Length: 195
Image 1 (cartoon, rainbow, N blue to C red):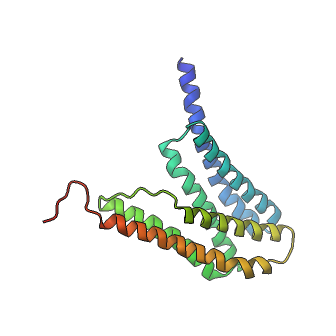
Image 2: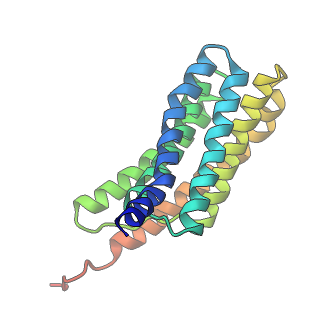
Image 3: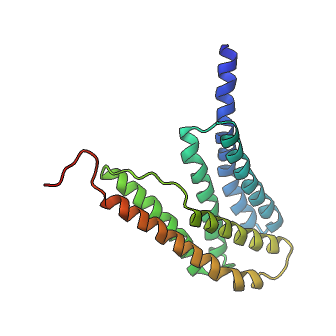
């Protein structure tokens, strides 16, 4: 019986280990791209993306959700996306203003969550449908840019036609989170009464 309990604990940690692997792929992806190995960077990014689907499936399908995983999975996702956007912007592959929008949205969301916790009004962040669409658009944009770079094709079509939709979805998603956060912060804290 003890052996079964130990195995259950190891199984529950499998999605967390996959998320940790995704975190480790972040510096590798960035280094490969900076080192002018776009095909390898593309492969590393795809592996990270696939690992996101796998750990989410395992956690949902087998009930292997953990408190650590609730923080680790989005941390790995955001670290990957933000790091690649920053790299592509720094190398002038994509417009700097798009990088600023993408990074600012994530920084503002994290800042809002931390502020709510500091003033003892913690907010439970759950992904909105618009945010899921935004994440898919950002990932698709990165995949297209890295894939075209790996194939040594022109990036102009993706940069010309993909930049504005990604920027708009990012702004709309950020605005939706801000609206939800402001509503939450305006609520009367539990246990308090108005003077």
